[in-house]
Image (cartoon, rainbow, N blue to C red; front, side):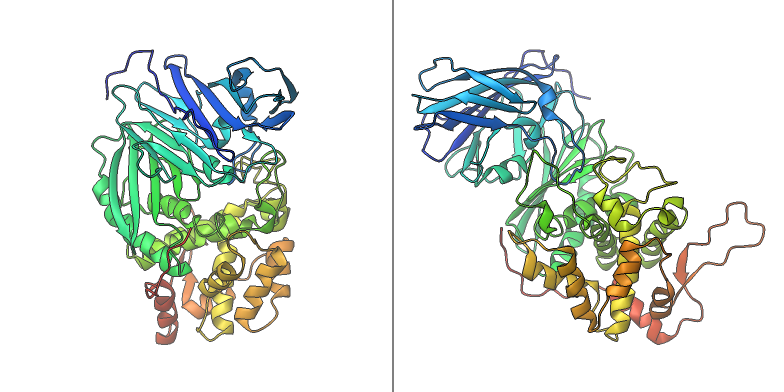
Amino acid sequence: MRTPRPAAVALLLVACPCLTAQEARYAVSIADVQAQVAEVRATFPAAGKEALELFLPVWSPGFYRVEKYHEQVLSFAAAGDGGQQLAYAHTADNRWRVDAAGTASVTVTYTLSCKRGSVTGNQITPDFAVLCGPATFVGEVDNLGREHRVAVTLPDGWRDCVTGLPRAEGAANEFVARDYDWLVDSPFVLGAVDTRAFDVLGARHEWAAFGSCDGWDHDLLVKRLQPIAEELCSTFGVVPFTRYVFLAGFRNANGGLEHLDSTLLSVSRRQRPDDAGFLSFVAHEYAHAFNVKRLRPVELGPFDYEHPPSTPSLWISEGLTTWFGDLALVRAEAVDEATWLRLVSGHVRSLQNAAGRRRQTLEQASLSVWNGSISGTGGDPRTTISYYVKGPVVGLVLEARLRVATEGRHGLDEVMRRAYARYSGARGFTAEQFEAVAAEVAGAPQKEFFDRALRSTDELDYGEVLGWFGLRFRPVEEGAQRPDPWQLEAAPEASEAQREHLRALTSPTPRPHLSHSK
């Protein structure tokens, strides 16, 4: 354990006095560690404007829950370019309208309570600070596309500043985001960060651990993680970044959240770096760099930070992300086939033991995410089903269906690669477009399948899974105290052709010529 630092510690993200016509700049200071209060200064160009309408988001992309970050704002003030006080009106819970007439720039200063040890909230401790974009940075309404800059001055004794944003050229700790979306999608971790860098097909990756992480085997984690990341890049056929950061917080927090060039993870010292469940969790968040951060449902972008969007396709964004994350583990030889089958069986078991599967469809689970759950988890299992539960099982069934239809030539990988080529980036896909790509790969209409799997509460048919891959559900022993009828295993009577089908699914993806892009 590190010795607690004094209560008064200054952390400054200092704004340059020069402000171009297009730049927005932010400055943050931590005035009182014990009170866990931060002060933020945000400066925007204002020449020729009567007023600026500013806002804080009410949700974080990837975490589908209204969080009301404005409730953490303790005070607010506005000033012009000469330091003169400006009038403002609090026009909504998360909005402020500032009188800008006669000033070249507007600087708003506000204080934030930073007591949330979560992947979406801000936290200040004696040893580190986590600043999450939506909870930290106000934006100017209808003017989010310009460059945003953050220059960081670390307080005494705080060694590192790590974020997915690139550093400004020639500046030690200044970071540049091309727009507001990238800024708020890039958490900052400040303090003592233990970083291991490794290469993935030419792109720099960093395992950046903070908090109580001493003595944990980070090197073993990197050894397991590097081939998993290579496999996922190969699966999608692209390296969509030049640098990626795993911000691994060993602190009292839960979950993980994907970002464009990073992920913020919650890690327990009790978790082992080679445990299949833990690697599945990390692989899931990394797979999101492809599926949801770049290939996304059309409803999720451009981001509306004040009006949470609804989409029927979170089974793709979350459920298929789990499917591919788990599959990458066995393809990268981080786990063996039997362990991978236990992971897959866990999803099947969770689905078949949930009464809600007969009450709520998969599309309904996605569309109702903003009420009755915590970003897709924690709903009443008697009446609802989670897309985290049913989504990967639909992935399993769809995988087999595609391979049967194409006589083994193509599977779900090919669907994702074609969808990525057509709809990633600014475009996005509709539910109908994604289903059409699957039908194209299969060479036959798939409406009946998707209607049953997504838009009905009928049971899924595992026949093609068992038949194509030579699997069975392990027989339940007579008199077993805890009977489990949903454990998949290789069928003893499987033919060589069936065994080859399973080997083809679980073998490493050939490394194609990969391009690096943003």
